[in-house]
Image (tube, rainbow, N blue to C red; front, top):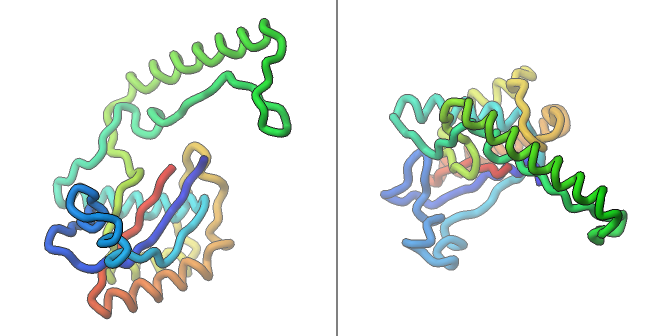
Length: 195
């Protein structure tokens, strides 16, 4: 559980947009077509400030193009879940004291109700999760500037982790170089994430 982020080089397709690449559409193409036209060039695990930068870019492009995307009441709050299951150190479910388990289940239900009520009070929000985002040369230049100046925006989310900007700096810059090269050869580059 947490923030997983990916960057792909994609063969151009007439149906590709800033928010969609056709090779990923299983209603159009099989897994072989995907493998032949999409290649992962890097991935990150819990790099929240990069995610925040990409989310800002996504929203700016989506606003300019009138793209609605995935919308949820309360945005990210909708994704928070809890469980009353208790596990021991080996990962085995513990049956334990029935009163304790019942208390945990009651606390779980109260928390679910609280999250649900908070979510319904929030306006609907566009959610940047499992949403491809095409990057162009200008985007990469702006990203490179933000990385080299240490200006990725402070960002966080449920299980996104702590700032990984320094840890990932070399990988980020290598990704930008690889993405530029791919674009110069006529490919498209997409960023995607899942949390």
